[in-house]
Length: 337
Image 1 (cartoon, helix red, strand yellow):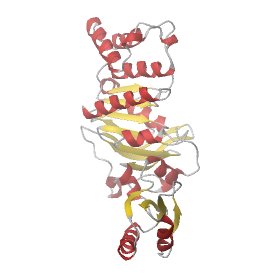
Image 2: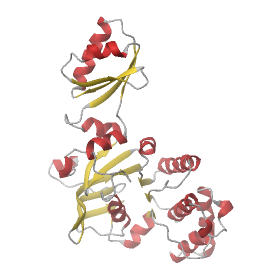
Image 3: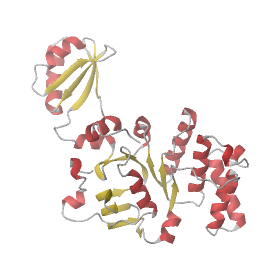
Image 4: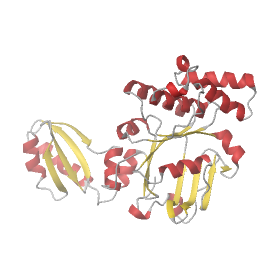
């Protein structure tokens, strides 16, 4: 679990102990990585370990998400620090190419090319024999459910279909790592659900699925880990609940209490010093409380339950999700993408 350092960036557990992140054969490791475009900062002092499963990158425009993706895929080299992908340095282009499949946000297709030709041609350029390339191309196209449109020209595809064919290309050579920039952008709800199921299936098979997304509730549903990035610094990393638990007292915890008399409960909880806000939920069926001392509040709530006639049905975190964490860590710095 990472530590949170606001605009000063992120210190991993290993860095906090005075060492750099340890290379491991089944991880992606950033060790004190910075990338500058001239005098413009891309990312700065990133220490990060990514493991198999679905990892989502969250941050506003210009935060450094695409820079991180390009660094993982070998399209960029770090200005400082080192990156290893499954034990392979990113400057080993051939070794990295076999391990990584990249689906960019930008659409770029040769004129007149069909979906099948797009994937097949990529495999052939990569040195795959013709028969094997055909087999792999059809398998990838089938996996993204685009067989019926495979022989149609990509120019006639919808946005969602173009997303699928790019994903088919990314998985066609059997990489262990998928780097996917806004992979569900343009998909209708049914297609997004199908794509999410595919990502989860790939993760279950042991793949790394690294995605960026502005659809935060889908990130919640999908992700094994979330990396929150802003202004080139990684602010937090880990599971949503772990990231929220690591946040300090500047960011009070929101709690939703479902009960039969929320107004009466509000009068009771306002008497406790660790409660800084209490208001009846919009649906009138519960109380939203914000506290800087969750342990103290839960003890007080137990006493209230024992000494009053209130019926408390449930107590749940009100902001244990990536959107709330994002608002806390980034605030009003921009929209997510």
